[in-house]
Length: 485
Ligand code: NAD
Image (cartoon, rainbow, N blue to C red):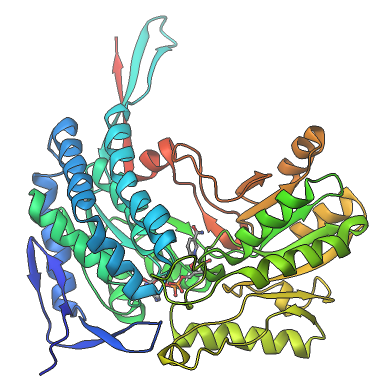
């Protein structure tokens, strides 16, 4: 019998097993670090029943009390922060710096932010003039949706799961979380935290397993009132079909093929550093990462050379080593996918400014999922490499001549998540940004988030908005009450 830890589901306030498991692999060296016990259909049904039952406690609890408990979740996460950091690194190979400054603190912050905000989730009131000359009072009250299924990806595991769990629970919903099968460890720790601080049984449930089995069963389960999903657009399409029969509300944060535009009047040094960050952070595995860069022809050569220097300086290595910016990709399967796009770029006739392969370490890391940051030029906008989401540390740089041309080229994609505009001309920034068919535009920055601001994409990049009041709106059901005066 293996001595490795076994991660299990958490249902109705208990950690439970099916006895059927698969391996959890560390992408730094390919070693198996844990076993993941996959939830059975029966366990999923129990989770749904427990979540429904918890509506009598959690759903009816005074909002102040509910939100105080969510603050306790955040407090306990902060106390166990190092365990969360180590678990996220073990699953993903991300650098310590990133996990310490982004993944885990933002995960905790999601609970604090939505616990505070939900206390102001008030309804609307209208005095209505009626045909008989009198009046009516219309007011709305917000009720929880009931049971919300949260399906989250592997790229920012804790951060993206809590971005949905926190507002859903703050609004009084019971949650069933299905994290990515690649990254279950921080979700498992979160279940322990929920248990430790006394979240009522069934208000938070965790079901572990693969998307095609456990995820699919969750989306089609009767008794699940809404699905909130972050992941690939292709998976979103499947989920949409699965929920169609029961007409469940969905919130979708999907894939992207994001552009940066660098105008000739940009601060070149800032733009180069900014695009290096937006292309290579988390090995390019952020839905908001830049994969297409449009640079004004007047500064094209200077920009390409500058970005190449930045890419060549990025330290790739062990997550805990000083100064490491890039660890491995999340898995060898994903490494093969990204490499297949590097080969496709070759076939499509790209010039490799830098990268294109796998770094060699001559140690255990050669069994890991490392990959070189890569910069391409020379492809048309219609090349597959410029149309499909690669989700790796790679960008293609094209020259452009004028504003209208570049706007049209940025919009020439099925995706519409985010864009970054680099310019020192204020009027241009205001003129160009709203013309981009995306959900988020950053000007002279990237990935700067305010949790109150709307977040989401258009076209294949998603349906709906979360963040601040938008999250409260999705996770509650406003009921209008009309009283004739
Ligand atoms: P994925 O779609 O493969 O998996 C996401 C989740 O869905 C996982 O938990 C998976 O198990 C589950 N799943 C898979 N098939 C399912 C099915 N048939 N039914 C129900 N659930 C299923 O995505 P991924 O590879 O984990 O994540 C990367 C993708 O996520 C990229 O496309 C990225 O752009 C996107 N993403 C988008 C955002 C955003 O905010 N828009 C944020 C992060 C990631």
